[in-house]
Amino acid sequence: MSIIVRATGNDNSDAVIRKFQKRVVLEKVVQEYRDIMFHKKNSEKRKEMLAERRRKIRRAQRLANQ
Image (tube, rainbow, N blue to C red; front, side, top):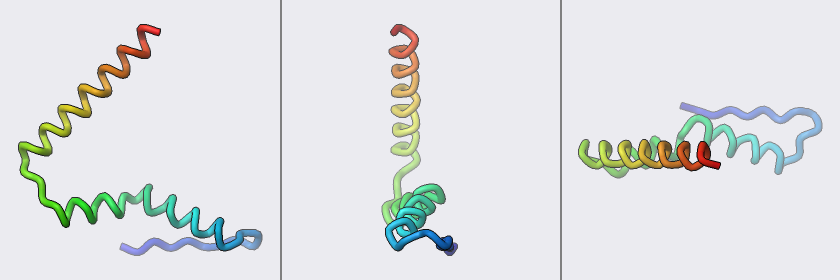
């Protein structure tokens, strides 16, 4: 799993670094690493999924009421 970022003619080093960071986030490299390093039990994963689902529902209700 390698990430390749090509610099175009008018990109400076900062622009290339930003492209690289964006690509790392999009491909979820850091998240995969954390998942591998810190094992979670299935019950913890399930609790997190339910909490996220509740957050999304509450947010949707809040936006609908505005």
